Length: 125
Image (cartoon, rainbow, N blue to C red; front, side, top):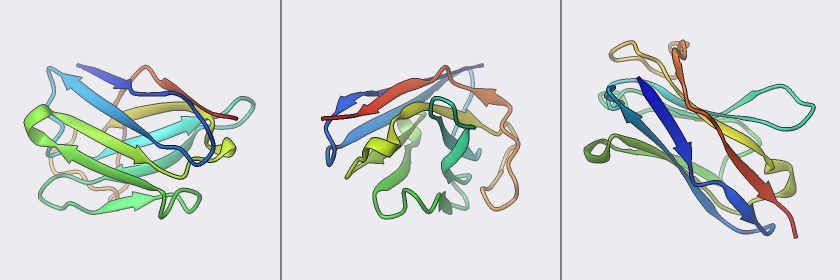
């Protein structure tokens, strides 16, 4: 199983980026998928989560509510994180992770068995 997170880059404050999390040899649509980030000198934190497709619920950290949107495209076996109104404090390495349990939800306390390699997001003028 491989997860690949990509789409990071350098963007000015107020700008937007869309991160993608693609999987190989693993189907994402009926699993909880999370996005995490880790800034230099800080602990990793959860940014957002999307539940199994038969549930559809989502979770956002308070720091990103109203600015980030998580979604999935099951046909492409990909989960996205649309990030708008980016701030310098959003600068971090972003990771996606998947709970391998069928039907897992964000509210059910997902266990993230699989992790992507991370993609750097830098918000700076």
